[in-house]
Amino acid sequence: MRHRLGTLGQHAALFAVTSAVFIGAFIGAVPANAQSTEVQPSDRSFMVSLRQANSWLVPVSKEAPARTTNAGISNAGRDIFEGHSRLDVDLLKAAGELGVVLPNDVSSEHQALINEMEGRTGDNHDRAYATIVRQTQGGLLVMATQTRATTQNTTIRTLAHQTVQMLIRTMTVLENTGQVDPSALELVTAKAQVNAVRVIGQNIEPSDRELLVLLMQHSLWQKPASRESSDRARDAKVRKVAGQLAAEHTQLVAAVNEAAGQIGVDLPAEPTTEQKSWANAISSSSGEELDRMYANLSRAADGSLIVQVARARATTKSVPARVAAQTGLTLLLKHMLLLEGTGLVKSNSLQMTDVPAITQTRSNASPPAQPDDSSTSVGFLTGIAVLVVAGAGTLWLVRAIGHRGGHRR
Image (cartoon, rainbow, N blue to C red; front, side):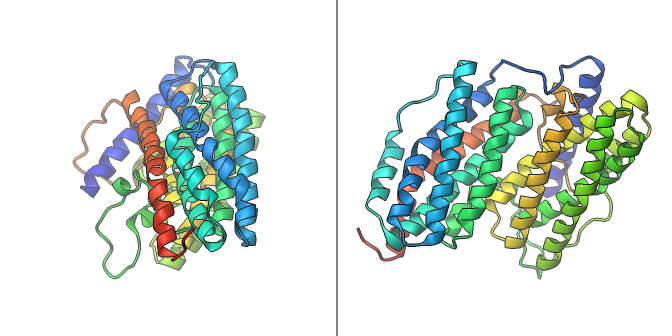
């Protein structure tokens, strides 16, 4: 089953990248940084989900400092309140510009949660607040990252980018309080990504190993390709961006190596067969063709990988793997923005499906299936499901945490 999923991931990633680059670059797809006013259902779903999350995270976080004596929770509450308040202002502005109707009222489930939290103080409040907020933010991170990687609407792309940046920061602040229950790291989507078979003699989550291997293989092809492009690209902007990416992959490799050493993961020494083909395509190009090839292949690969890295950041219980995921997520987000800033990234390079497979070779390969919009839609629907389930389960979490701590209102 694992091999089959890996093979399918390879096919989907290869087809998506090649179609995005060669079709997009050579038949004149619009640049990704061009203004698009069209709002896809997945874009609308993201905006509605963000609005619903803000509707209860803002008031609950505003009250957090008054309900705790824990300095970490107090600081986290203020940070989360300010972050989601700013996001809500930007969200409402974007919705007005795009004609998207957003809910104005708090849902009955979220209002019940607000009411439930109002009576909690001290340790009783702290554990419940840290856990339910972290769980909600984890689900929102995955959805916002998916939107950031795939949306062709530049207004929504900016909003999603800001959302991911804010969540990366506030999730870390919340985790550092030491009050987050492990249940907050379990997303509905995460379980389907984890292979149940463990490596004998190693206490390693397969998903953590896959994360580190994916990040290393990504650097193993993109760092040398970026170094070469920084020397050979015709466009000065492309040369500058490529040079920055090459330099920053050193930081990513260091973070991955450190995490791998701490948790005992053997890392690959070469990129995948597909990734080698991408590097070869860049090497065999020159002039404007090289510029377009490098920008589109790199942006497509970053967009494919960043969603799985975000999922790992939201769910891993391993601190070393979390640090590596945080570094990877931050750099990939930055690199996508830099590549889009060249003006050469075509809109088709944003239409990614699955992440690149981590296996070095493949056998009995079948022809790649034609990707369609359903895979992206499924990703967004899954993200919505995460938030819905989190919302429906938060009251149970609050009561369960309160009961575990032996505190009563």
